[in-house]
Amino acid sequence: MAESILPNAIRSQSQPHAFVQIQVWIRRLVWKIIIATVLLMAVGSATRVMNAGLACPDWPLCYGQWIPSQQMNLQVFLEWFHRLDAALIGFSTLILVGLSWWFRRVLPSWLPWATLGSLALILVQGLLGGLTVIELLRFDIVTAHLGTAMAFLGSLLIIGLCLMPYQSNQTAGKLRPVALTSTTIIYLQCLLGGLVGSQWAAHQCLAIAGTQFCQVLHSHLLGVLPTALGVAMTYWCTRRTPALNPFLRQLGNGALALLGGQILLGVATLKLHLQIEPLTVAHHTVGICLWATLLAIAVLAVRDHRPTTPITA
Image (cartoon, rainbow, N blue to C red; front, side, top):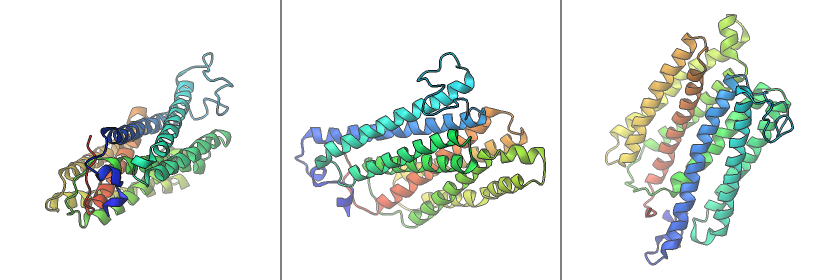
């Protein structure tokens, strides 16, 4: 089973040090793209909250320019910077694919294909980003834009975690299905949150009670219950599973803390009628981080039952 994670060259004690360094460079590049993607999603949330989604009326340029200096204000800057960050991430992903295929002989056999999958996702993401402008922020396209961004982030997380040094204790047991289920639930909850945001459902419901937008908002609020239950069960498994890798326990603690912060931010956002934009952006960003943490637990729990030789840093 370990062969699906590491190639023979990596398991060999006589391999050149340069081969190990190549894998370390690839891993570091993946994690840098992951961090940039989380920041991109935070900027995207700020762009929507600040009503800047159409600040640049054309695409892919902004007012027909690479840098719209004459039209630059806060809203234009947010939309322009969001596109710039997305382009840099796309370029970095292209480099990742190129390196993975160029050095494929000393890398895990699955890695080049996995990076191609990530590249395909970010190309779809770019297309959806253009459509959000062309279709004037149509809610279903905006929600699909969010879902694809999360899928892209998830693909990079899986790649990064599978390349990360990890000591298998083969004790994960029930943690695997629990974490996988929780990850799915939170992904769907984030999409519901995307629907709430793309339709401005919270604003509409708070302004006029009983509208159809209240159903969307209430569905998202009800989704807090299965989300909290899933995180609590995952945390319980990380605490009660004997001889579990300490890093998994730390991730369980982090997931519980993020859940508490996410609930507090959600309550504060509603109580203040979404008038404090940084709170709304923080609520969206913490939700993404919570989902990413649960995904990390699920991936490492799957890896835990495979005896592997960690890659040296």
